[in-house]
Amino acid sequence: MFDSKNVCHKEIKIFLIVLLMFAAQLYATSFPTLSNKQGIADRNNNILLESRYKVFEDKLAIGIQKYNYYWKNCENTIASSSQPNLQCPQGSLLFPKSKKEKELLKIHNYHCYSNKFIKQWTKRFQQNQKHHIQLAVVLWTSPKFYRDKGCEGFYFPLQKRHLMDGCYPTAEHYNDYEDWIRFTAFTFGKYIDHYIVWNEVDSTNWADSSTSKYPKKVMLKDKEFHMKRSFDIYKALLTRTITSVQDLDNVCSNGSECQNLIYISLNRDWYGHKILVRQSKEGDIHILWRNMNLLDYLWKTVGLQYDWSIAIHPYGDVYNQYPNILTFSTLKDLSSYQKIHINLNKKEANKAWLDYAQSKLFASEQNAGDKLKADDWKRKAKFICQAYDIGLKMPELIAMTHNHFQDNIQAKNKVPTKYTMLPASVKANLSDADRYETFQAYESTNPLVWGKTDTHFCCQSYKLGCLKN
Image (cartoon, rainbow, N blue to C red; front, side, top):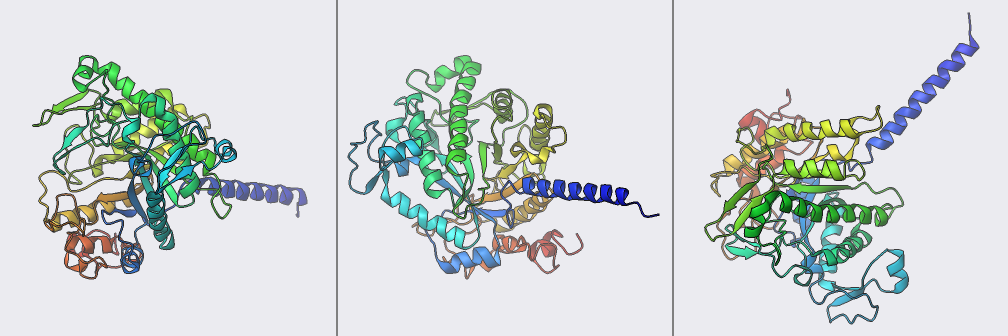
């Protein structure tokens, strides 16, 4: 017997299911969706050859490129002013341009930003956009006139020089940091998909909170107090970054909602809460607050109030079990930690943990790691294959970028460095890169190759990404 009432109820039920599925799909795409999780961090980011980028897009099919985006290079002449009559030196422009723009963009002070910086980054970002490569920027390195004069920095053996890049801006210059973020979101927001706030913030080398009042030796006398002080500084920068990007980058150039993720940056020191202290041969004190401590702090003070994700640096051979540190194969431990806290803090019972920004991971620095020889291309290639294989099986992992794709081509010394996938001797157009196993491994991670054929490098060499698996 035909029951029109029952049919009507069924139709309504189907309509509601479809509507819910559509809503779920809309929500699921609120995070950046990459064409490929494989990406690069390239020291040769000034080389914008079409032939080079065609290789990135077509042959390697990379989905993302990560850049170090230095505040000190943008604002490098004079400090800001609260008055609109700030006279900018030649080669820089006034931002904001007027009182009206200042109010509209919620800018605190007037600044002189480098024309060279703006032109340089515009060209880079446009090239990425043209070749469908998403952008990730690491926001850090405060200008000298915004740092504490007592910030110590540290000696960096790989570059054989003393670095001050980790020095935080002082509290009175948090507004200047926020202004720079607002400038970035306003000027380049239509290009940028991923913002990483500072670098390895669980370390006093790369996130340096030493001051004239508290040198690192003094900080050791009360490590817990100074750990919280350092984390308080970082929280201020993180939340200002999130609110600024939300204010100025909600609408892309085509009128659709921007899809951004904003990350905290962690090194690989993970298991346990014990604060580590190391001293270099040069006498520099290196304090590791441990990223488990930082995450505990963020869950207590920020939680789900803001959307934040994690950029992690899992250096080391993929499958080795190192004490106290994360490798690529143990990223699940970090992911499980986040899942537990998301589920404890969420208020929507039916919302899956993967629908929260806090679930998302970006392996933004990684390499085959300890005791690695610079020219061991085979070991580095194996790492690319293994890391990619693991990454594809982790829906929470957004992307991965190795340090680094290629050594600086313009360097006088062409000897390969430890953390590079290709030497500087390879041509800028990459026409001769195929002779290196690392490049062949990158070719294997092309989504049109991985799992689609048995003839590529990773399958032939390591039985990974084959047609049958």
